[in-house]
Structures are given as structure tokens and as C-alpha cells.
Image (tube, rainbow, N blue to C red; front, top):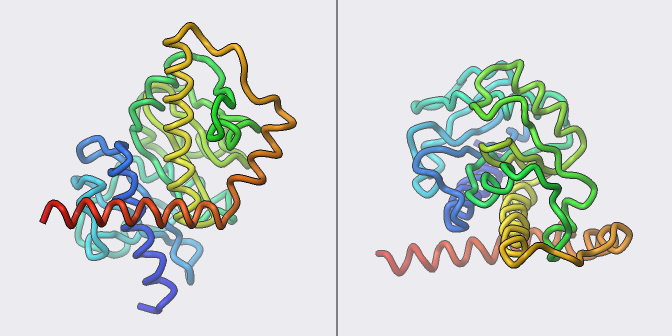
Length: 238
């Protein structure tokens, strides 16, 4: 395996653990993938029947855009079509995240738009689609196509009463987008618990904040911090 592929696989494993550390694990549910660098029609995917925190490089499976496992010993998630159909229409995307992040699930049930209450909300001020056709799994190619079409050029969407999907040009970008989306949902729910927000960032300033705060470098640095915290926690548990 070449050095670039190894780099992406290491980031994918780290990304799974960061999402678990952030509280986005749901037993064995949730999955993350990254597109194989040398083959745009294949990607590495977390296997089924394992939690996000359990994943290591040897467990990853390789999948093609038809949703077929082409390498690896472990099982294939039945929601693989979230990944295949986004990769099919978004050549800029190199990582896809789907989790059952609890605040995102709860917030998606309200039917309310996500507001830029804190900094994190500004990341989604250009729109956060909600896939509401079903609350069931995205277990067919047709559903995957509809999710990818609704996502469009956005960085994230919510699956109503189900979870979140985020994408990025890097693992760091997709994972940190999921972390910040979960926090943005949590902050808005806190505001509603206090009677509802009466002030939030206006659209023009939200765009300025998004471009200034959430740069690729900032995402790499935030991801690196999360990885350090994961490894500190692992060291304490030994």
C-alpha cells in the first residue's frame, strides 16, 4: 500500500475514534468512509457490527461505487448507498460521515431551521437540508441518490429522526463538520429550553465568520486536538 493511501486510512481510523469521543457513537451504528486516492471509484469504509471506537486499519473494507465489497473480511453496512451516491455526484468529496448524533437526531424532529446562534451555526448558514422522505435507513441506491441530490453542494444534511451526514475534501473536514453540527444543534436546543433564541448572527456576518473561522487549517488543528484527547483517554484506560 502506498504512503498516501496509508495516510488517508490513518486519518479515517482517527476520525472514527474522534466521533465516538464526541458522543456520536450509537453502539455499532454509524459509519465513515474515505475515497481511495488512486481510484476514484473505490473507497474505504468502517465495517458493520463494530463501534466507531473499535476501528483499526486492518478492519476497514474496500467498496466500489456499486456498493459491493471488493476487499476486506468484515461486513458491509446496509446504508453503504449514502457513500456511493455522494461520491458518484461529488468528485470534490473525499470523506463521508454518517452518525446518529443524539442532538442532531432530536433537533431534526423539530422541523425548525438551524440558526447561527454560536460560531458553529455559521458553518451551516448557507443552508442545512433535511431529508424527510423517510426516517428509515438509506438502504437502497434510490434513497442514496435522493440523499445525494438533496445534499447538493452543501457540506451537511440532517436525516429526519435519524442522524446527520457530513462531507469534506478531507477526513478532518468531514469529521469536524459533524462535530460542529452536533454542537450547533445542541446549542439551539439549549436556547429553546430557555424560552427560545431572540438574537443570532445575521446572514452577512455569518458568511464572514464562516470564512474566517472554519478554514482548512483550523479544521486540521481542531481535528488534531481531538485526536490528542482520544489518545489521552486511551492512555488512561490502559
